[in-house]
Structures are given as structure tokens and as C-alpha cells.
Image 1 (cartoon, rainbow, N blue to C red):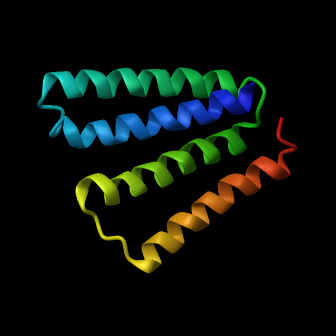
Image 2 (tube, rainbow, N blue to C red; image 1 turned 120 degrees about the vertical axis):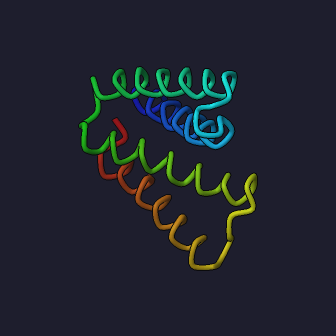
Length: 107
């Protein structure tokens, strides 16, 4: 259950990071509210997950999910460059996330 909560926390991290772009520097009330709500949910879920997972592993996975998701959506939504090198490095982060899951025993 803690891994599920951690993955969900990472997805909400993507949500608040992307929300920052849509909030236009926190100047648009509705996107700013959505960003703040996603941030709070992400933190609460992370806090729940670290009750059973090592903090170093959980934090690395949480930020990794956020980085991979935000960078990928930046390419899709905001026309950020999709160079081979960039895709390669995003993939490397993804491999690290999966690796941390396996070496932690998946619990």
C-alpha cells in the first residue's frame, strides 16, 4: 500500500508542477488553487508512504516520478525540445525509479 501511495504522491507532484505553468506565476486564482491543492495532497501522501518506506528511497522515487512526468508533459503540452539526449536522460531517471523499487524489496 505504501508504494501505491508513493506513486500517487508522485502523480500529484506532476500535477502541481504543471499547475505552476498554468497559474502564470501564481497570478491566476483557479490554477493557483489547483496547484496548491495538488501540492498538499502530494505532501500528505508522501508523508503516509514514508511511514513504511525509507525516506531516502521514498523521496528519490517521489521526485523522480515528478521529474519524469513533468519533463514528459513539458514536451507534450508546452513544446519543449524532445531531443534524443533529453529523452535518454528522462529514461535514465525512470530506470532509477524502477531500480529503487526492486532493491528496496518492493515494500
